[in-house]
Image (spheres, rainbow, N blue to C red):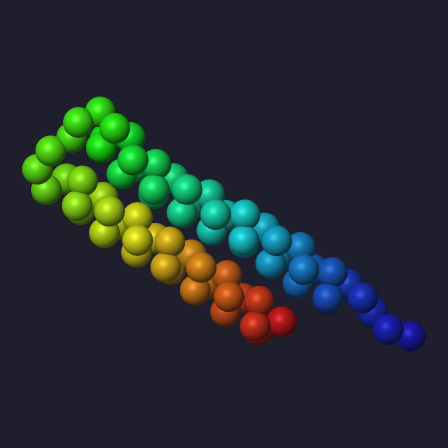
Length: 70
């Protein structure tokens, strides 16, 4: 008899982690888009862009690793 709990748990964990990664990435990109829309100048927009890119890369990389570890 096969126990499907582990595969179900893995799929649910993958989906939850993917949603969390998307939440982080969208939040990071909104963090740069909103100041730029309201005319932010100086180094802050570029720092936010770097942060958004880093958060997106880490989130996607972690989600992919979680998926491949299944």
